[in-house]
Length: 60
Image 1 (cartoon, helix red, strand yellow):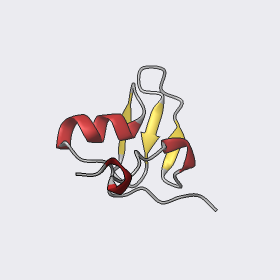
Image 2 (cartoon, rainbow, N blue to C red; image 1 turned 30 degrees about the vertical axis):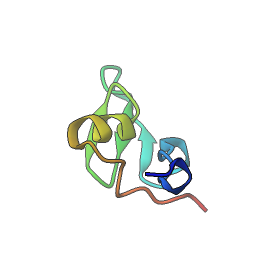
Image 3 (cartoon, rainbow, N blue to C red; image 1 turned 60 degrees about the vertical axis):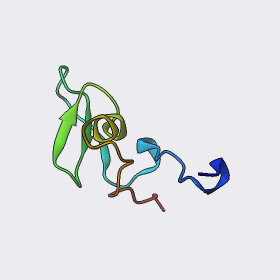
Image 4 (tube, helix red, strand yellow; image 1 turned 90 degrees about the vertical axis):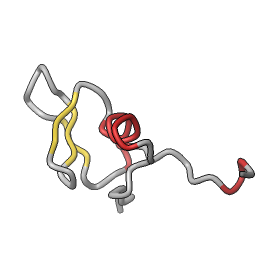
């Protein structure tokens, strides 16, 4: 596949569902998928499903 046609990796910082938690063990969260993580949520999604996050919605 041509690299120019691939979808860019979503940036959690730009997503409306992303939030910072108060949990020191799991500081990053995704409201759309209802989970907290030690890493940015898009990395957890990519590792577990092999696909980029399908719930990404750009802020503003």
